[in-house]
Image 1 (cartoon, rainbow, N blue to C red):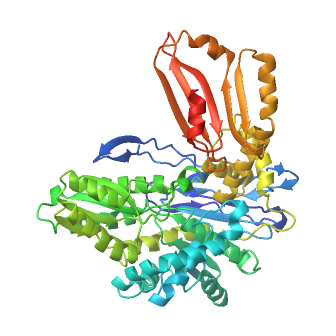
Image 2 (cartoon, one colour; image 1 turned 90 degrees about the vertical axis):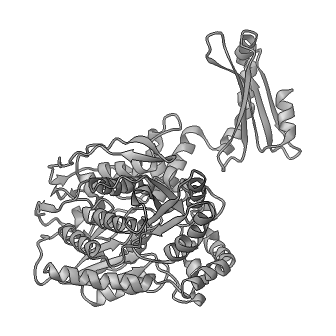
Image 3 (cartoon, helix red, strand yellow; image 1 turned 180 degrees about the vertical axis):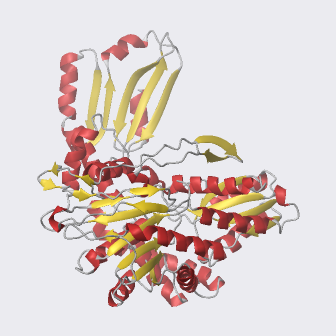
Length: 611
């Protein structure tokens, strides 16, 4: 949405605690959105989106929702008070009401003690802190996402990875002074934000909480409680939302709040993302424009946006909106620059990948080499997902990537500094806090009278969403649960429940193996000319299964002479290979000839298939 303010709020009536249930909403969810339809064009081989720009101002009008939906005997929704926000905003703000809470008027009064909680990643203060910091990082299930059956390995695996990676990480931190400057800069941002709020006549205590190092969220929340804060705005210092950054930090906060009677009733507003705010966009554009003037030929400089990457599975399987938000953010920054007459080529790449899994592409190091080979001579690096200097800007970009760029033929290198305490940026954060204040509601969890639905119960509910084994994405299901039932469920829990639902619809691989013999018998009874074979090893474990239907045999003689053979690896949970042979019929349609599955890739399987 375009930048603006929350200009009007329907004043809520007092609702009995027994009538409140889990509810969370984003500004984008309480409005009927005009869908942004992206189109694609090439910019040095990297895609870019053009967004249809239309105001989004149509809002819901029902002040109260009354639904009753039951999943496996668990009530997931009871009467929920719905607050209408009129106006335009560029923040995604989480609103919460839960059982046992009472919603009062949100008008600001002098008796209120306002708190602002800044959430950030954290970083080791000294070289001795590197290994324990890495352990905290990799012990987070939102960073290393293990299957349910293997979650008991989370901490042992984190210990192993942190020990193995610590020596190299220490070298990086030693190169930038022996520790991370993130804590110091974030404290400075907090002080600047406090002063910016005071200039706007809002007195607030501003706190800093780190996810993986001191001051930990638990420590800071206890201070918030001791200070008697009556209204809290949570502001993660991540412009774009990801389940591994904002999502992880907010979940940690919710886990602390849920067991405390005071905190669970504390009115809270969570600003989940703010990359579309005009103040942020203009601040980024200002820094880029200023750095471009340092080049001998500014108009020839490639603007190179480098963002922190996440595993592809986060986006494609868990529904993480990070990639979409990042691409839209780049579009908005370039739009602002073009309005100033700056029409430089630009590209986006992702850095900081770890481990053997596939991360968002293109990778920063690979794109730098490609740009050098294409003849790019001047490049301006823009760390777009970071708002403060730390190891990934000071060491990874300034040292590693700069050296790689120069070796690849890029002659003029520059880097945009992080926003840090840039005045326009801090002022915009203050505006975001003020806009979010009227939206604060109590954040707690369900009581025993309204227990959380388990993944198995959700799986049963999702079952009819997958009639053919395919269905909506994790993000779509999260939005649907929120809209239909007023509950907010984590992406990871929804993803796990959807896997259960798919197994219920199409059967598990264990069940499928058990019915293979029955399927073979049915083929023998119905398709008399079909050929089929089920092979097992000496332990009666599945080896491979071959099918050649009678209709395919009969039609084979009429096919064109070109035959195509292709394979695909089955999902990791199945650990097998599917091999298919096809050709074209007389009408140029694809005609299947035969297929075979095996438990693993080996030469004997291919020889058997072709024979």
